[in-house]
Structure formats: structure tokens, C-alpha cells
Figure (cartoon, helix red, strand yellow):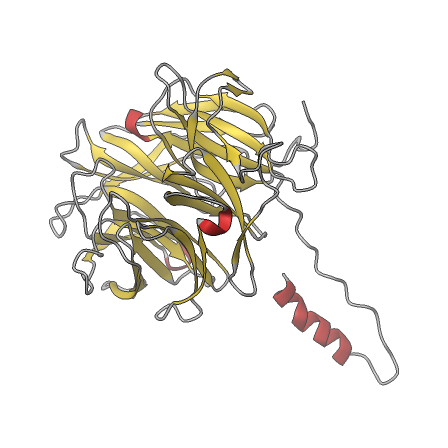
Length: 425
């Protein structure tokens, strides 16, 4: 917003004659902080339920960092991904992966969220994983497999906003026999979508990405990633993010390679390895969810030598440059942690973070990204009342929806709902 305001101010001065100050330029509005965090959490105890928790995320609120509401979905199934950002409207898609179940959570009243719908398979397609909104409100989803078991690759499925089936296409391709549909990223500006392949069950080991024509879901190409010097970093392609032009795409693998995707608008797309972080074994090492904001790329990186969030300047996407690294020591941790999920506050500078294992596995943390420098820092005020430990803890026994055991937070997004945000219970 500040960069956009500069040429307007210069124009206002240039239009004024000598000695005439002219009308004062209007300051660009500063977005207010997102007042809520929606956190999708997996129950740990037998007989308990995965649930969506609502956290007060307004820094000036008396209830800041308090869990103000929660809604169970009625099953325990390893709560996994939500949508990566809160979409327009009041419904959030979340999935309990191991149960093969997806839920639509209505958050039009953040203090009383409710389950508005659910589904498991769509025809033969099973185990939904990632959900991305399309222009107009439909959802493009990946389903890992077809049928029972893990023998047949799944597909891309387009859903309407209420979770109804629209169309689907298989992802299986002999170019990469190990394909399992993991994530998908629509690129409407060039009528494309890019999907990746990683097996949530840890059996198949894919090494490709696929390019689709978004308008009809026809496959353009399946492309194997170049190996790189380590020989393994190309395996398990994970996430694709778009840069500020909404066209340039970068792909990361769980084994910590970073690829610039070229020629997506053509019939012959390709990938160029542009950056790597150390990776040795999934026992301790993994690159999880990334995000972009302006010219910066933020990557979660778990490693035995010291996990971190890594901030990269991607002004030249072919030559990323590390600008900052936020380590466990800097946020008061004493042991291993595995940062995994991050999501950026729309129009803000805050990042929500959850972890796969280690010291922060039961905590939701809020960080800050300096939009000018790319520096990362902890929000020390986001913590449970009377706690000396940063973050909101999910290893508790009482929740707004009732007594229940600890849960692991995973998919989490900032939100600015369109209705009833000023009501407190």
C-alpha cells in the first residue's frame, strides 16, 4: 500500500503551481489487523474429535490469543490441511486426511462456527488433500488416490462452493509411475494449473509436476524434475507458490529443493533448480509449507542441525538470496522443533505457524515479516494468559466445545469475517 501511494503523492505536487500548495494528498488506508485465526486441529485421544478452533487475533483486544470458540466435526482422522488462505465468503474447507473426510466449516459467526457439510470420496476419487479457490468461487481439489488402498493415482476434482462435484481428471501418467496428487495451484492469468506429487502414506516417491489447462482440466505435460547435485532433492514435490505477477511459479520439494518453473504458458514447461537447503533424512529433516509476500519467500525448514524459518529475497527468482533466518533459540526453544505450516495475514505482516513434531507440536505461534527487509521475528504478545511460553497451547483438557484431550494444530489461517465480528459471547 505504501509503495502504491508514492506516485500519487508526486503527481499531486507536480500539478501545483509555484506558491500553491494545492490540496493535501490523502493517505493510503492502513488495513486493520485480521481479528481471528482459524486453526484446524487433530484430536490425539481415542474417541475424540478433530475440531476447528477460533483464536482472537486482534492485538488490541482484551482477549488477544484466547481460544474463543471451537466446533468438533465428529471424527478423529488426522486433521491436516485447511485452505492455505481464508477465501472470500464464510466457508472454509478442511480435511481429516487419514479418515478420507473433508468438512465445510461455516464461520459467518466466528463465535459460533458450525459444520455446514462434509464429503469423503467423489466417485472413485479418494483421500482429498488440497483445496484451492478458483475465480467465481469453485474449488480445485487434489484427491490422492482412486478406490481403496494406495495402488492407483487419484485426480484433480473441481467442486462447487458447497462441495458438489463439477468435473474431474485423472493424474496418472507413465512418465512418473509414482504420482500421487498432492497439491494444486491455479494460475488463471495464463489458463493453467500446476499440480505436484507426494504420497501422504509414504509409499510412492514421485519426482514430477504436472501442468493443466485450467479452463478444461486437460493435461499439457508431466515433467520430471532435474535431480540436482545431491541426487535426492527432486523427490516428493510439495508446494507451488506464485510470485507477485501472479504468473511466475516456484516449486519446492519436501527434500528442500526449490525450482523455478519456466514455459508454463507453452506446451513444453520445464523446471530449473535455483536453491537448496540441506536435507538428509525424514527422521529429522523436511521443508514444509512456504509462502510469498512481495519480493520475499518464507520457507519452513526442519533439520537436525537447527530448524528455522528462512526468508529469501526472490527479486530475481532464478537467484534467491537468503536475508534472514529465525531459529528456535530466538523464540525461546530448548530442543528440536519441526516448523511445517505457515500462512500469511492478508494485507498484513503476521505469519501463523504450526509444527509437525518437536517442542512446538502443540503450539500455534505468530511471527512477523518485515515487508521492507524480509526480517523475521516472533510476536511475543501472542501467548496464553499468564504463560511465559510463546504461543497458544493445544495440549489442554478443556475447550469451548467441552472437555477433551490435547490436539495437534495444523492448517491455520487469518480471517476477517464479513459478519458479526464485534460480538463477544
